[in-house]
Each structure stands twice: as structure tokens, then as C-alpha cells.
Amino acid sequence: MRFDVVTLFPELFTPLLITGITRRAYDTGLVDVKFRNPRDFASGNYRRVDDRPFGGGPGMVMMAEPLAKCLADIHSERQEDVPVVLFSPVGKALNHAMVMRLADSQGAVLICGRYEGIDQRFVDMYVTEQISLGDFVLSGGEIAAMALLDAVARLQPGVLGDADSHAQDSFNPALDGLLDCPHYTRPDHWEGRAVPEVLLSGHHIQIERWRRDQRLLLSSHLRPELIEQARAADRLSKADEGLLARYNGGLIDPL
Image (cartoon, rainbow, N blue to C red; front, side, top):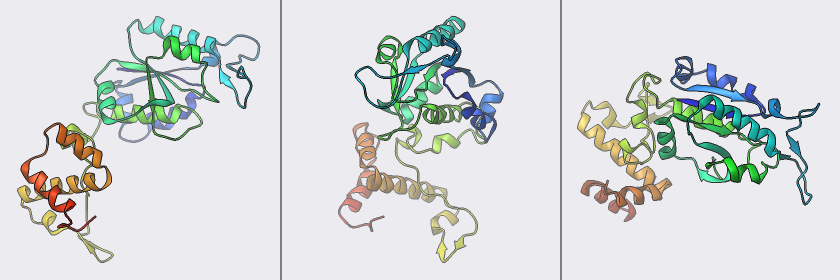
């Protein structure tokens, strides 16, 4: 797959592409990342890409024309219909389902805005999807683009050391969309705190039940909407529902 990133600051992405486990995805070409700088498509001696907003107000707005020319250059090279994604506070919050969809696609064009935003006419004409990282504002779309690229890269075959690692991630359908359980490693006693005995028992059925229970309790406590989504999809067993009933009835100590 290929992602074309439209950004005024392509150098910000260098650590992402050369560091950590996910670099395997970029080194092998499983995730091909290319950059376009709108300034290269701007006119005039100063190659301006922004101007003051009509109607007044603080800040600057990215101009439509350099972005449109940049996008046209990408389309002429790709010659395939892929989503044009803008990272924006008005977008849908990025979630695992969106990452999985993009991870199983041909890729996308990622538009990283700056300043007060992008001329709305460009958005209306060319952007097919808007994505947000949450209810806060960043200085630009680059951090959001890096988050998306990293999430997509780790889902590619052979990128993680264990092919089943991402199946144990929070929100993964393999966990019925629940939060993951707590994890522990050596030593088994640290600062007066012990690892739960069941994890040391070697009894795999009991361990899996403990992990399932912890996922249910954590999700119910921290993200109750995940429980409702799993219930609506008929993913909860009678044992699951019994545990949740005891927890909500105060028969299990709160987390």
C-alpha cells in the first residue's frame, strides 16, 4: 500500500520511518510513504502557501491552489482512486475499525493542515474523509498522520515479532472490541506487590478466564460503551454477563 503525505514539514516524519519495530513496514515497502510539499507547487518568488482569512481574524489560512496542484500531481502518478484524508478537529475520531480498513486498502492521500486551517473550497472539492485524534487541537496534521501510519504499519504481516501480537490489542475484534487486560513480567514480587497467582499457575484455561474477566471489568469501569457495543453484537457469554452483574451489583470490589 502507499500513503502520500501532503505536508509543509516532511522532515518531521524521519524518526517514524527509521525507528522501532514498525520501520520494517517502511523498509520492506509493505507501507510505502511518499511526501509532497505544497510549497513546491506555489507560485511567486516567495512560494506562499497561506494568506489572511477573508472576514478578518487572527492567523493564516492555507491556500487552495497549491494544495490542488499538489494533489493533482499525486493523482497523475498514482492513477488510482484512493481516499483523500484531512486531519481536522471536525473529523471522526480515529478508531481501530478505521485503522483496519486502511490497513487492508491501497492506502490514501493524507493532508496535513497548518495555521488556522485550509481554504474550505479545497476541502469541499477534494477531501473525502476527515479524521481527528480527539477533542483537542494540534499545531498541524503531522502528528495525527504519524499516529495513523504507525497504527496501520503494525497491522501488516511480518512487522511485529509475533504475528498474533496485534490480535491482543485493545479494541481488536479478537478481544470483542474490549480493552486489553493488565500484563506482568519478572520479578513476581516487586515493591511489595505480587503478580496475580493465576498467572503463575500454568493452568491455561484459568489464565484465559482471568484475562477475559479483567478485560470485561476494565472496559466496564473505564469505557462502558465498549461493553454495550459488545452486548449489541451478541459477543458476551452468560459467564461474561454474570461477572458484570456481580460487579455492577457491588459484589466484586471496584477497580
